[in-house]
Length: 259
Image (cartoon, rainbow, N blue to C red; front, side, top):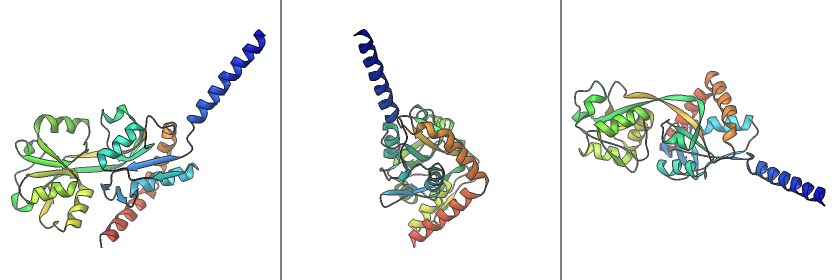
């Protein structure tokens, strides 16, 4: 009788272990990203397109793992989806300490993204760097982070309001409600072109920083164990010229959509 009980106990333990293993197996990756960050990432229908989604799609294909890119709301909502485990992966994200609590960052970064201060051409001011923004009114998109160091500087030294997208921020800039807009150079330039006000706004030089942009897995995802393999894929595709082709193709796709 005792042997039978022990056998049943072992069988139950093996069954639980097997079920737990099955639950933790990565069978499909659901990714999301910034809906307004061309050409790195942008919303198209119910999905996120761009160079970053193209990069992870190519890696997933090589690893023979299905990957679905889904639009999950604005940038703040996309981050929340990754935090809550609704998305397995988020693409095109800067590192900061808060995000690192719920994201496993894939290293290396896949691109360096210059962050600049945009100003109205007719209301420029003397500028050599971040300290020249102190005492002025700024704006940036909700949910944006520019890395731990600059985020701390922005919180302690700058007056920056958060808007529902870059378009609202640039409208406030042209209207004189703010003195500058903080944004990545490439999505900012693309948005100005789309709005038809690129002749009224320009980026100040030098750039405030050049931030590393990453792919990251949700710590709640069963696919987080794939981080090292995706890191290998990123290294390969960013050194053999493949990602540059993806970026060029993404720029062309975004420009075509705006015609």
